[in-house]
Image (tube, rainbow, N blue to C red):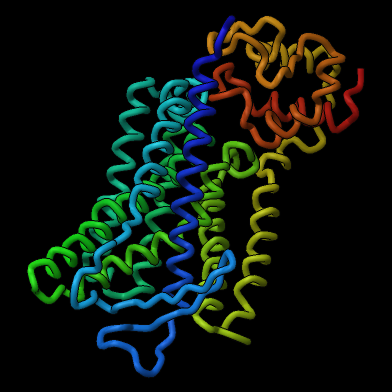
Length: 398
């Protein structure tokens, strides 16, 4: 019996990442909704900001929020932190098992930058740390005192990072690193700011002191950032399944569009949950829909198409030669690539019939998406991609 250990480790970690991620996102969205749904009512205790009545699972719930903290510590206090920690830990473990373990296939593209495996890994680690440090400095600086200015600053940081990643890593590796950097910022917000500030408030209560209200405001700011970053990060973390996102020459622009679209959708729900109606909520979803249409059109635009227009269509023999030279090291009944014992997804290009059967996959992955070959290890050229594209679109003539 042979066990594909790397595949099973990847599967287990991905499942764990999904479980913990759902738990973190669920609690985060719930508390943001709750915070925005609180209302001031007559007869509240001193220090209570607002309350909310909820119904779920056949029962009613009554929740109060103190603006800083209650006068005494409650006997049972529930913390929400491990969801965030384990989401990041499982996500980083996935980065290691997929992008570090198989750096030559998924992280490095020699046509972008001829990196050694350890060079790429070190750059990856340093970029995650640098992203958090720069973000944290912005939040604590004068920029962080203005919500709008800070939002623009975080947006520019993400765009700059994505542009730099596209000049260092493969398209797939660059896109996943934008998500990893933003995910690291979100988890660090919980670990470095939100939870420590809450612990300081608890310590003040236990000591009979009045907690510093700035601690809660700072934690609230970081929690809000996490809320708006969640939807864009979710899409970036599954981007490896969609080459039209990460393979574009200007994929950093696609990152910007995803941030805007995800932020608009989140803003709609936040505004609605806060009681916004009419014009206050009428524009966000339509604007996000327009943004999605722009994203689809931009991602589908091939800047190299014009240069290949009017060129001759190659014969089947030439197409087979390109495919077997550039693709069959993995997609064959007997792969020669050391990373594969069998053809990925069972897709093989050993003869013309198999190529015909998988022509649309070749078009999507190798021509339009340029996601294959992995890491472009076989150095397929743009001219060869253009030749294959014209041949497939012309009906694969003999």
